[in-house]
Image 1 (cartoon, rainbow, N blue to C red):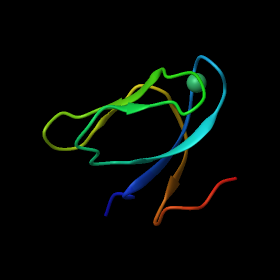
Image 2: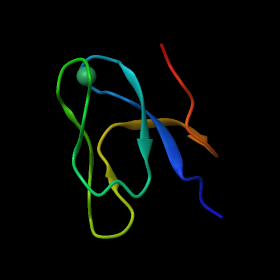
Image 3: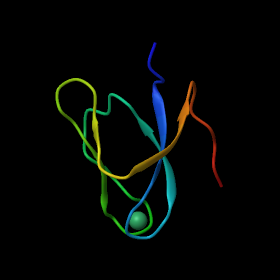
Length: 61
Ligand SMILES: [Zn+2]
């Protein structure tokens, strides 16, 4: 079973952000606004670098 969340590293600013693997909207970096994930109708297309797969969302900062 695939992990429902990814920890994605923004390629532009290095920010780490939790992204839902089936995000239904574009996910932007909270720091610089770069696109981290795009919806595809199913699994989101991750545009950043996946550094970790998570079974549940973590609270970061
Ligand atoms: Zn960024």
